[in-house]
Structures are given as C-alpha cells and as structure tokens.
Amino acid sequence: MSARAPGARLDVRALSKTYVFGGEALPTLERVELTAHAGEFIALIGPSGCGKSTLFRILAGLESPGSGEVLIDGAPLARRLGAFAFMPQRDALLEWRRMIDNVTIGLEVAGVRRAAARAQAAPLIERFGLGGFETAWPWQLSGGMRHRAAFLRTVLLGKPAMLLDEPFGSLDGITRSELQQWLLEVWGEVGSTVMLITHDVAEAVFLADRVYVMTPRPGRIATVIEIDLPRPRTLAIEESPAFGALEARVREALRTAAAPALAAGGLRRD
Amino acid sequence: MRKLLRNAWPPALALVVLVVAWDLAANAAHASLSLPGPWLVLTSSWRDRGDLGAAMWTTTQEALLGIALAIACAVILAIAIDWSQAARRSIYPLMILSQTVPLIALAPLVVIWFGFGEAPKVALVALFTFFAISVGMVQGLGSADLDTMNLLRTMGASRRQILWRVRLPSALPQFFTGLKIGVTFSYVAAIFAEYVGAYGGLGYYMNVASHAFNTDLVFGAMIVTAVLTLALFAIVTALERAVIRWRPREELEGSW
Image (cartoon, rainbow over all chains, first blue to last red; front, top):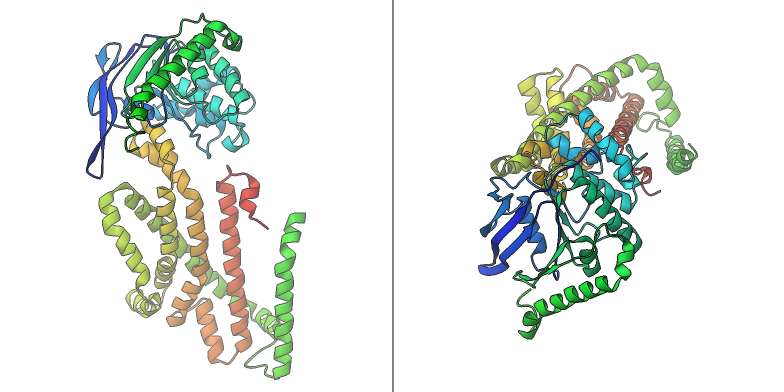
C-alpha cells in the first residue's frame, strides 16, 4: 500500500477540562493520562457522556484543554489543528462532491493539486472496496461504503496518528464486523498510530492493543487493560476463551468505574 | 416525457376553463371595450406585434439586468454578513429596513434621480428582488453542517477554504429558492417603474394603450408579462437542476 504513514508516539498528560454552564463549573475531564506507542492501536471505552468525544475534540484542536498537555513523539504540539487525522462519528461526506473528490479533500486543503490528489488516491480506491464508484455521489453509496470512503479520506491525510470517534456506531452488526476486520488489515498496512473511541466492549477488545476504561463524568481513566491477543487477528478470535476473558475484564472494569457514581445516587447533574 | 404530460394536464385544464369563462363573460357583457374577449386580445396583440415585441425586449433587458445586480449585491453582502459579526450587526438590519420602505413610493423618486432611461428600472427591479435572494443566501450560508466544517478545521483548513468548500455549496439550494421568489417580482417591478416614466417597455406600452382605450392591447401586454415571468421562473428552475446535480432526481421533481 502506498499510503504508509509511520506512526508516532502519542502522549496525553494530565489533561483536564471544565465547562461552565450557567455560572456552574462542570468538570468533564479529570487528569486523563494516555499513551499510544508508535504504530499502536488503543481503544478508549466509557459510558456516554464521560467526555470521550470532548477528549478527541481537544486532541483534534477543536477545543482548548483546560490544563495538561498533548505530546507527539515526546514533543508538545504547537498547533493541534491539522496534526491528527480525525474521523468523526458521522461520515461527514460532502454531498456535493463525488466520492473521489470527497476522499481527496484533505489533500486539496493541504494545497495538493486536484489531479495529483486523485492520482494519490487511485491505488487505494480498490483496496477500500470503492472501485468503480469514483464518480458516485455520496447518496448513491451504501452505509458501509460511505464509512470506507470516510476512512480513506482519513488515511489519505497521511498523519502519523489517527483519531477514530466511534466510526462504526451507526452501522448494522454484519457490516460492522466486516469493517472491523478490514480496518485491522488496513491499519497493518498503513502503520499509523490509532486511537479509537467506542462503547462496544467486543469492538475494543478485538481491535486494540490496550483498552482505556473511563469513568462517568468527570471522565478519568479508571483502568488500563492490555489486550495480549496475537496478531493478525480474525473474527474467529472472538470465539476463543482468551477473548471472552478479556471482554469480561473490560465489562467488569466498566461496572466498577460506574459504581461510585451510582452509589452516590445516580449521575450527578447529568 | 410521460411524467411531464401527467403533470401538465391539470393546470392546462384550469387554464382552458378560465379562458372559456372569460370568453362567455365578454360575450354576455357585449362590452368589447371594457372587457375584450380572448380572441380579440389575441388578434389585436398579434397585429401590434412589432411594438409589443420591442416593449417585451426592453422590459426583459431591465428585468435581467436588475436581477443580475440584485444577485451580485445579495451574494456579496450575504458573504460579508456571514463572515463578520460586525457586518452582521450593521448590514443585516439595513437589509431588512430596505424591505420595509414602500418601494412603490420610491419609484417616482428613482425616476427623478436617474431619469427616464433604463437605469431607474434596473435599480427598482434590483430593490424588489434583492431581499428574497439575500435572505436565502444568508440562511443558506448559515445552514452549513457544523460537523463537516469542524472536520475541515481539523485538516488545517482556513476560513476561506471552508467558505468555498462547505459554506457556499451548502447555500446553493436556499439561494435558488430566494432567486425563484425574487424573479417573480422582476417584470412587475420593471413595468411599475416604466409606468411612472419611460420611453419604452411593457409598462409604457400598457400606459399608452389604456390612455387610448385600447384595452385589448392592455390585456395582451398583461398576458405577455405573465408568460415572461413564468418563463424566467422555468429558466431559474432549470438552472437550479443543472447546478445542484448531486441530489437524487426525485427530490427535485417535487411531490406530485
């Protein structure tokens, strides 16, 4: 594959964020610590509203951190906008652009000429199962194809780290497992560092090298679970006892993380 | 084609009924002067086709120039309003204000300022059509999807890149809605300006004809105005389809 983007080490250090709503402070993230080594795949899992997406918005540069820092290969980032390849929950394809022009938009924004951008995308179109649909409008693509196009757009950015925010959240189960398997293959070829948000335990265990379990708001890292399943992984691994045991550990960690909040009489002012 | 026929027969039938009713009324009244029948209108107007055609051409030029001026102003101001808070606060109220003044009362003034030539007509057409186009444009720019714009920001896109790649394309459907509303006023506005003072055009033609009690010619000019306005509307609709190619066809064809 021609789009190799060797991964970078990514560190999040003591990241906190507090919003103020109607004069009241609402702590959303509390001293979040994460590490993704170069070329690693890490997953972030937690109940909805725990601040996972806020963390991504901060990493991607859409919001400022309250405190803490983000390091790439050990160095603080001067400008986060444009530093990561971000894939939002919704595919956010531009409906007025044909598929090929949607996947190359990042290159275009970076100043690559349209013809050169297309040439760069061409060899990957087939690999992403989009062959023959170059000139299709987004509404003509299936849900799975839209996601693959959105992912190709992300890969083509050629950044050393990718942030995937629940990329498969809106898909049906079958399409979803197909895409998970395929994502692993593509990731193996691209080689970049990946950070994935999910609230699907099986997805986290199947994809990641390490799973970070977050607490309900304010989001903290409650537990880190190493996923030592061998790679390359195929969907068959989901039937193995080791997989089941890891899944059970993540589930248990999620329950424990949520327990203090529940014990304190439900979620505080959610 | 079959769909076109299926869609066309109800309005065609309604039109036939209207013309027959008109004919019956004109005959019953025996008043060829105050209410000329459709046949008389048709034959008289055809006989006068030289003058009528010239008037049509003059008014069409004024209407088209006025619309072009309105589009240019509306797009530039809408982008300015969209771009800067200061522009929004200062220009937007003025835009709305421009629509609250009785434009009809403005017509004689415009003629006094710009004379009897084409300029006052173009100005008045622009004033009448500007508002719908600009409001559509402002709304359209504002309707751009936030997630998509944020995604482009994470790619390092500048505000200008986002304007060109997301906001302007997002604005197109509403721009065309505004334009369709706008163009329906264009001929009427031009004719009104001509009525107040002109050397040509449909308004002048109607004015002269009615003073000479040629009511058949007045009716003829009215019908021509309606047909021209409809044609302009159809052209804008066709243009909209040509520009907004990315939507599924059914969505554009409406819900017949």
